[in-house]
Length: 363
View 1 (cartoon, rainbow, N blue to C red):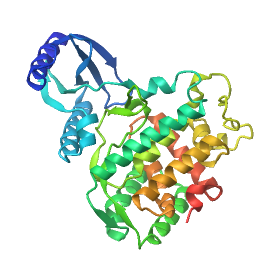
View 2: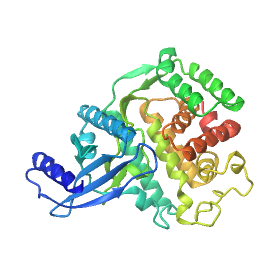
View 3: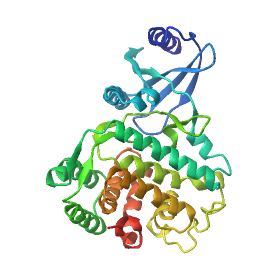
View 4: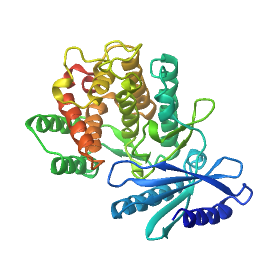
């Protein structure tokens, strides 16, 4: 199959970039463990620069995911936003190759933030971490401003269109306890108190975490990949929450065997068992530290969220509505038991501890 894939990619590349060198080598980038995961092949041009990415579906579920990404890329690029043109892949066609669906797109330059993040010492460096959060939040804010499609009132119609489907799916697929019932009932009441607010609508990536961000030599974001969950008319908070939450999750992975402790992050470990009582998911520690902890990193997370809301004209009280909804939505994104159970443990932790954190108490 690889030869047929190479021929197809070469033909699309000649059409898309006739002035660039022809394709040469290729790298198989691997695939994930979710049912919808695809095999990704990166084709380099003769100069050694990234040129074309081919995503190959492994099954019907992955084929549907490729179709969604193709449609999402077309929709996002149709906004005409300069940032999108500069840092979002351009689809080169969807084809059937030897019985498998394939999506071709232009490759993006830069280094994956995921690799930089996991370099020992990076997440312990306050300057480096601050630069990462500023780059991500800055790129998002520009995307949201350039693709803004008006604003809608925080009324019953908005709740029915946006929040209700998230909670219905969560209840159906994940479960529903007394704790969740109380949390989301209060979330709805808090939403009703936002009646005078308007929510800007804009393009949303849907999976805005380190693994999908490409970093240039100056530390800025030069590319964002994997647009399968994107939408051009969404509230502007889930991408910001996703980046900050995932950034907090994995800080300890470069320091195994330390019980969640990370140099220069005193208190990230859970010596009192405050967060472990909600489950065994390792990411609970990072979650608790980011949103309920003390220190320069939790302060940076809070400043990033509050600054973003202020720039968009959204009241701080909106965190008490959109953050619980973000957690519920994330619990259903992947059909992977570890992540579903893990995000449910975050919801139960947030439900129990919410009154001690700024996300809930902000007014």
